[in-house]
Image 1: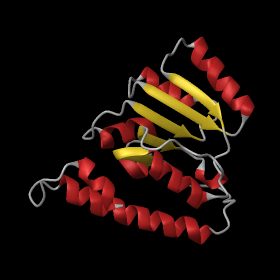
Image 2 (image 1 turned 120 degrees about the horizontal axis):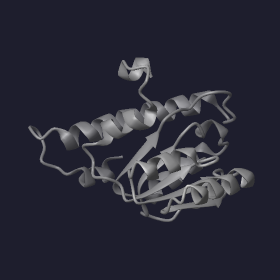
Image 3 (image 1 turned 180 degrees about the vertical axis):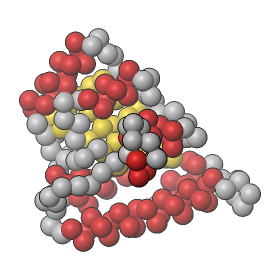
Image 4 (image 1 turned 90 degrees about the vertical axis):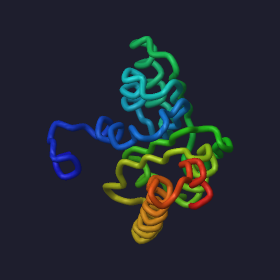
Length: 178
């Protein structure tokens, strides 16, 4: 936290929200690898979005997430058991997709990234907060190469869409850039 924000007390959700404040508030969000649903509940309590759909491979975690959301009387939360290696996500459905501390558990990373791209609405946000730990993917290099490409494309698209001095494009126009 200190390296990214200078504030050791700043959590990643608050930091991400501040960075994303200039974007339109998402209505429908997908959270992949949601586990027990802690992040989804924080986002709903903070009214970050109206609807969040959490997906995880662990049935017990999903049951726990549902129970915790019900115990807190939080609406707008749904959960599903699914394997991210084979999941088929609906086309252009979500305003934002969150993946927190889960990509390193996915063997079929390219499949999942294609599905994320498919399910995002034009101009949608993909927020990946970490790739850490022991990587189960076929190659550490594949993750590194993908991240380098993603960051390059994201920085190019962001610069082109947000620099009003050189471009009048809207963020939604940038969907086709990546």
